[in-house]
Image (tube, rainbow, N blue to C red; front, side, top):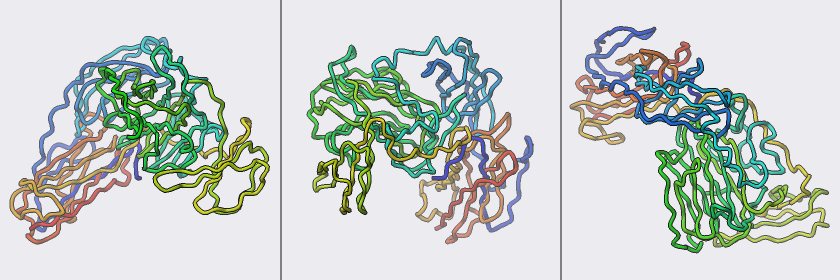
Length: 516
């Protein structure tokens, strides 16, 4: 997956026509001259509207999360002499003094770089930080903030090694997941106990942030022996999952779990899903008769089912990228069981520190068979489609730490996108009518670029500056193209180039459409 940080530029957009096209020239802000072909009309953008309804909270005593209402392409946030461009109506400001008031200004920014009047808010981290959130956890939560964060005693990781890294977060770091799928199996089980003051017999919490493109995080409670099986898209029997996307949060439960009819009142939360670059804390609260999802302490989803197992094993899965910040469990204290999974595609020697060993095989009907091995056996022969589970002494450290290389800061973005549609609604791959107008839509996901260009069949027809009043932001540009100069029955190639501010290579998107 090709994603970039919000600091690079994106290329321009070009339409190619068979005839010579005269260009209309306008004023040239900065270094890019505005040029629009005679048969192209720029769809005017609305002036950016001042954001509204600011609000603040904190997951840590030295960080502020500021959210607001607005529908702009992006926003410019200023505080303590700093400035940051963000793609949505929320930002997190780390590395603050907990007792200092912070003055924050937020401006809406249009796709061409125009700024609105500022929305202002003043907040102090200690005033909005809730230090009671971790009181119901067993032990200290895991902080994914350094090279030792994925200790093999506590975690088994299923991901390509190069797709995990460490990205700056204030004075510290957090794990950056940049791969199509990564799974993190906890070796710390959750044992359900007596209901706490909030009714929960057990719980799991996760603090994560999304990527700019669609991210998907799933926290699943697995009964034995599914924690030994590799991650798949199929839902194992008896499981309950906290499913989080950029669109919202839900609870997914195995249909065979008993339904209870429990009713839970949802809280008043304007957003319930992942946010690009901004952490939020989700709690999966297990009650005797329901599983409830909370986001930053507000109930956002529930499922009226009863988990009959007394012990479950949490697993985190991240699809499409994101940032992993913290994890913790609550219930009856349980010891970590360092566990290693070895495919039996060859003979394997059992390690000296093994205290138990099992053979795990898939079985028909979405089942798994488990066979215990005598610990005294030192050699395990190869067996097709079989995994060897080795449970070691608590002080053991199976395997090696994942390599977590440092990565630059910034929110990730995707490349530009280019779409065409005839004014009558016809879209590729259908041939577009040879008469009338074609709407060209350029979606730019970069921050800091100086403009976009559009070419049609090799000839530039649009040059549009995007930094009128400051650095450019992600946005949407629309153009009407008159088809009078295009040949019926031909194929036309559109090229969009997003031009970086540093004069480097543009980022390109292309599409081809056919005229009927």
